[in-house]
Length: 152
Image 1 (tube, rainbow, N blue to C red):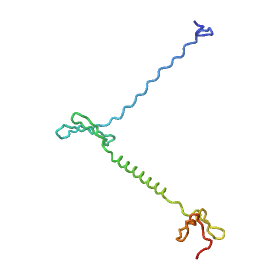
Image 2: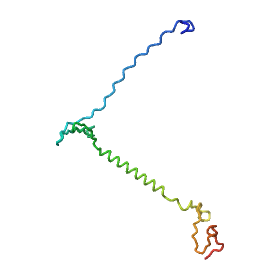
Image 3: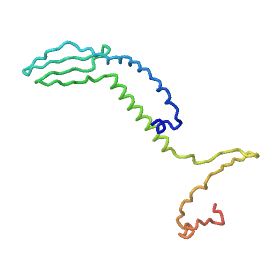
Image 4: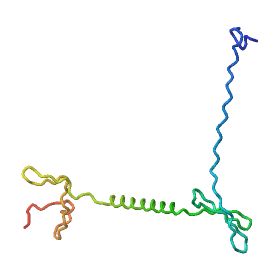
């Protein structure tokens, strides 16, 4: 039997060391307890009660008990409302600024430099568009032909 499990024929080795039991996990702190105010009886034919809930001294909601049902109503926080409005305004202004910058036309003239003799160099400028002349034939316009004689 030893030959099957231990082909060397030697005695089996000592048993593996026993691992120590894991330390118990530290206790998990409980969730913060929200202070719940006193039950307020509301006037009216169906009996109703209101239980306010506060967190760090600020009201965050209320439990409404009415007609055998319990509902939680959240209170609107004015700070969150103002922050949301300011964020929406900032996004709108940024969008308008990007749209305005994107719609600007490029400059009509490229780089303007002064030459050695005081002449002005306009690099990258396209010649101005020709205005259609009333007596010019269609083929001259199509070929962009120019007159040889300058009229004064």
